Amino acid sequence: MRARGIIGRDMAVDLGTANTLVYVRRKGVLLDEPSVVALNDTTGEVLAVGHEAKRMVGRTPDNITALRPLQDGVIADFEATEQMLRWFIQRVHRRRYFAKPRMVICVPSGITAVEQRAVKEAGYQAGARRVYIVEEPMAAAIGAGLPVHKATGNMVVDVGGGTTEVAVISLGGIVTSLSIRTAGDALDRAIVSWLKKEHALLLGERTAEEVKMTLGSAFPAHDERPGEIRGRDMVSGLPRTVEVTPAQLRQAIEEPLHAIVDAVRVTLDQTPPELAGDIMDRGIVLTGGGALLRGLDERLRHETGMPVHVAPDPLTSVAHGAGRCVEEFEALQQVLVADRRRR
Image 1 (cartoon, one colour):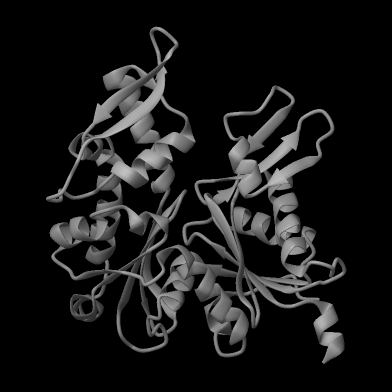
Image 2 (cartoon, rainbow, N blue to C red):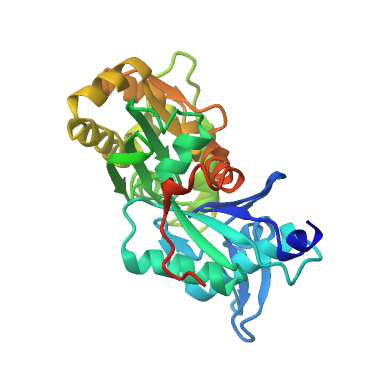
């Protein structure tokens, strides 16, 4: 048993565009950090990863770059992703630098074979002895406690940072799914461009995210109050504050919101009638950070006529689902994408 411990505890990684969560077997989620890496451009060394690196975004001198190595759910910078993964593994394994765990990594369902291979390769380079892939909507459904192995239709909408995953799951497999590269980041960008156009105000991506979380909403509510947004005036170049109402912000993010609602509609349209009946009874489950956008469940309910529930802990649903795959490896092996690099 001791020897097995030395090999390294199996782990699941929710490698997200905005955040990376690491679940370690029998221990639960041990790490939840932003997917940001700060690099020294001169030497190429990693200066900070996660929360520390995120604090540097928009505040670095010329020789330091704080970047997000994943864009729209896929690897944009392979080396930075590999270094970030390695850093996260060492964080959870502490003194076990020779630990070689089995690793389950979550990927968007619309990912290409090349992109999937890049994720696996990053896992192997970061020190895993075997890498398995699980599709995000499947992991989200397992993490949200849906009975994925039963012959009933379960619909999950996972709104992450880079992608929105919509899938109907039955009998341990994805019956129909749609992955669009419109999610939390697109909402932030919409807020930035709207403020630029309407108020000639420049906003950083961190501030845009804060505005979305405090003032943003997808559906009108009774107790809406305007809020203040601070940015840089594009004309004078000086800091300036403007007052914005939640209704105006809804107008700002309408385009990406409509794309998310449309993806749900299209998936429902492609769902076999028997499974659509099940979804009508059981409802749609919302997971991911985007599920926390105020009124998104109301908006989907209004647009589709289906019951909509937000998962108990939407931010960690995918990580917990992938973690279940690690805990019950034999039972849940059928949901994993086969690994061809067997050794």
